[in-house]
Image (cartoon, rainbow, N blue to C red; front, top):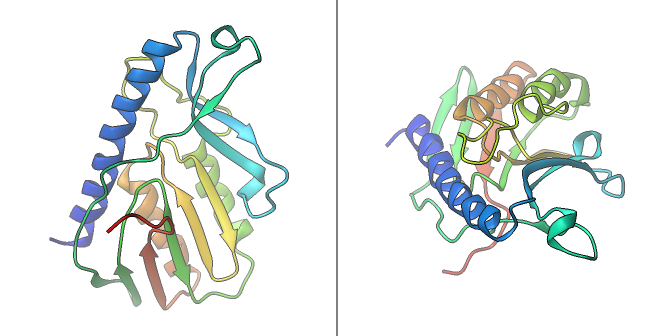
Length: 188
C-alpha cells in the first residue's frame, strides 16, 4: 500500500465515523449544528485562534446553553510505517488518525505567511461550504496548530488533497524530512 492509499483510507475511516456520530447527534439534538467555527484565543498555537468543533447541541437542546460534543474515533488505521519522497523531501507516514496528525519538519522559518492561503482554502473561515444535515461533509479542516518544528492538524472532513497540498508547501519551503504521526495515544 502506498502513501496515497494510506491517506485516503485514514480519511475515509474517520469521515465514516464522523457521519455516524453526527447522525446520532442530530437525532438527539435536532437544533444542533455540525462542524461549527469557533475561536480559541487562549490557545496561541492554533492558527488564527480558529477551531471547528464537531457538533454543537444548540441552545434549544439545553436550558443552560449549547454544549460542544467532539468525536473521539473508536477505529484507527493500522499499518506498518512507510517512507517515500515528495520531490527531494523524505516523507514518513507512521500513524494516521485523520483528526489528529502531527507533521514534524526541519524548517526553522516562520511558516505563517506560507500557510495562510492553504488555511483559508481548507478551513473555510467564512463557512461557505458547510453542509446541511444529511448532506455530504463539507471538505474542511477543523484546526491547524503551529509549533516549532511541527504542525498538528485535525483534517476534519477535508479531502486527501489537504494533506498532500500541505506536504507540498513544506517541501517547497525547503523541508528535507517530514514525519506524519498521531499525537493522541490509543489503547494497544
